[in-house]
Image 1 (cartoon, one colour):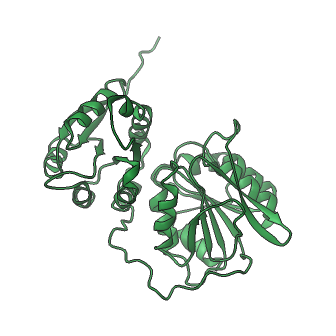
Image 2 (cartoon, helix red, strand yellow):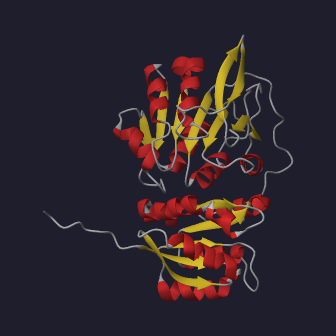
Image 3 (cartoon, one colour):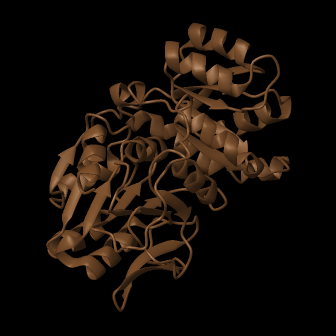
Length: 353
């Protein structure tokens, strides 16, 4: 019998000004053999010194700290020593979370607004899962991600919302790394796009509305969190609310959105599979699906439905996908029309107008 070769535990640095939180996070990771805490820092300055000395594989980061806060730390870290960062933040800090993602953080875990030991344990499995995801990262794609903290908001002359039917409805699936990828896409759209974008981004409830607002400031589309019965026009973008599934439907000559409660068939929520299936039914050979970075296989079954309807599936290529799970699984399943790097996907979508 051949010996089992175990991977070296992932080396994690904890950055948080709260002694209680540092101890709680250390306790969380003590429950797995796949990661170990190699250091703790109470502020950004100390964290930068430890990153240089310890060279951790991953960092958990609180954003509000004395001396040097999490944002300044992220700017310096990503410019000098790009390292995967999982932000641990409360629901009350939604804007701060997205600012951190725009500065280069990989993902976030939402902790209860009033942390007690029992509460922090509720995020244990998610924190471990997202930190261990670092093993699947493509280092070159991670280091090369565009940062958006200095990108100006759209000027006041943006086009007015249109009431015309979209030339194409493009459904987008994304998970880890998706917010930055979507920022890239929306920032490259033409000034007067004629398409509409429907987004199934794996994200907790209460964060999707803020995410839609961030996207709305970065491009020429009017982007909102989806509501049941919303009409889909050209130049409109919709983000599926967390804990909900979104579908596209026809109502006479109109295209409308339906929000549904997830059921046992929805392995991921929001579900890209369900969104893609509905776009295939509503749009047929005009259906378009885009699968961006993310862990798992959400979107693969829905992509098959779009392909079977005569539509098109574009997947992010290994070249730029921070996590190649979702697009890679779709490609191996033979349901991808074309693989493109992220800037190419943005330009491809822009070509629809």
